[in-house]
Each structure stands twice: as structure tokens, then as C-alpha cells.
Length: 256
Ligand SMILES: C[S@@+](CC[C@H](N)C(=O)[O-])C[C@H]1O[C@@H](n2cnc3c(N)ncnc32)[C@H](O)[C@@H]1O
Image (cartoon, rainbow, N blue to C red; front, side, top):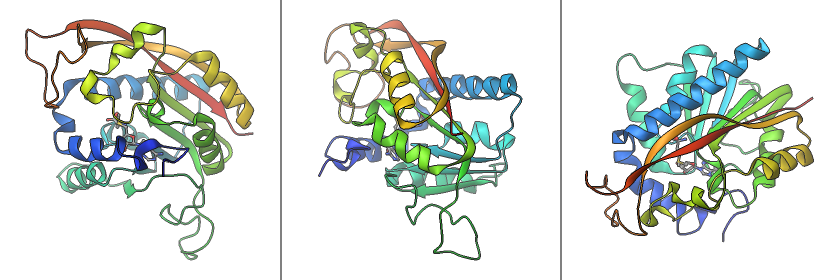
């Protein structure tokens, strides 16, 4: 069955991310993109004079963004539906110098009371699940079939006064579909985030002070024609493709 919150339970997504997990960190683009996201999130916290301490990251992958945010917070629960991604994160957390405050969890999150989330009170392991003062999610929303459903789940995971800061590439028009090579369209639900649609969905779910706007731009190597990079999943040949700029959005909202 294909879930409303993620198509990862279908054939395209989980399979693709489990397969890509081992080589994920070898791609410079994913580090650069997470760096852009971390800077946008930390800038927003400074602008608002807030310092969230209990953070949930949905779709953390191998934890590249988690590692950048963890030094600024008390605890970060990093979840991903692909077990392969979480295994890579667990291996990275064993290495010297790794942050000690990241809690990795393999789950496709569709319910704020999912038993795999930490309990609100450690003395009551089967009681209500923890609520968070910040939820982040980077390069994930474009994989989600029903954005409203995932936003409702996020809303349910927040404390009162908590906020979301979600980052992804922007759907700025028909060229946005070039973000993914033809071989990586498995699990891609939309070609980026449309500012007007996302703003409307966040408001419908009940978020206040909603702001969805382009915060930074990144250059990415794209195919000149469908299938140019082949289907090996490896990096394209040096002489293949061309560079293209993609705007990235920060989607902000508060639960009041
Ligand atoms: C493009 S990857 C991005 C990974 C990471 N954020 C990064 O930028 O390196 C998208 C990730 O989102 C995860 N994902 C998508 N929907 C999810 C959901 N509802 N719950 C948990 N993980 C999800 C996938 O398993 C995949 O690892």
C-alpha cells in the first residue's frame, strides 16, 4: 500500500534510499545542500532570538544536517524511513568526535504517538511520546505525496510554541524537474516546493506566522537530455551534463 505521508512504502522510495545509503556521503552536493539548510535554520533562530533545544529531524538520511544542528541543541531525534540510511548514521555516531546528543530512529513517521519516538517521560516508556520545540526536514518534502498529512503529523509532534523550519528546493517552474536525473525519479512526488501551495497547506493545518520563501541558491549538475547520466547511480562523467541554479526554500510556521 502507498502511504499518504510518504511513498517510501511503495516500490520507488525506500528501495532507492537503502541502495544509495552507503555512497550518500560521497556526493559533495548533499553536504553543500545541508550546509545551506543549517545556515538558513540557524539564521532564522538568530533573527527570532530563539534557541530550540529539543529537535526532531524527519528524513535525516545519514545525518549530515543532524551533525550540523546537534552542537546547537540539547537533543536531536533523527528519524528516517530507510533503515540503510539510519545504519549509516549509527556508524558515523560511533566515530571519535561525533555528537553524543543524536538519537537515530528508523521509522516512517505517520503518527505523532508512534511508539518508536522517545517517551515524553522516561519513567513511563509506554506513555505519551516526546514533543519537540523544533522540527526540521531537508530535501524530504518533494518525496511526500500528501503534504498536508505530513504537516499534520509534524503539528502533532510539536510543543505549544514549537516551530517547523523545513528546507527543500523550490518548484520555480517547468525547469525545476531537471533537479533529478531520469534514473533518480523513483520516490519523487513533486519537482520542488511551490511557495503558494505550501503556504496554503501550512495555514490549513493550523500553523501561524507562516513564511515560505527562497533563502539560498545552489548550483547542481543536471542532465542535458533525459537519461544522459545513465542508471548506474554513480556520479556522472566529467564531460556529461551542465550546471544549473536551483533556489531553496525555508518553510517556517509556529504552533500557538
Ligand atoms: C533525498 S533524501 C534526503 C536525506 C537527508 N535529509 C539529506 O539531505 O542528506 C530523503 C530522505 O527522506 C526519507 N523520508 C521520506 N519520507 C519520510 C517519512 N515520512 N518519514 C521518515 N523518512 C522519510 C527517505 O528515506 C530519505 O532518506
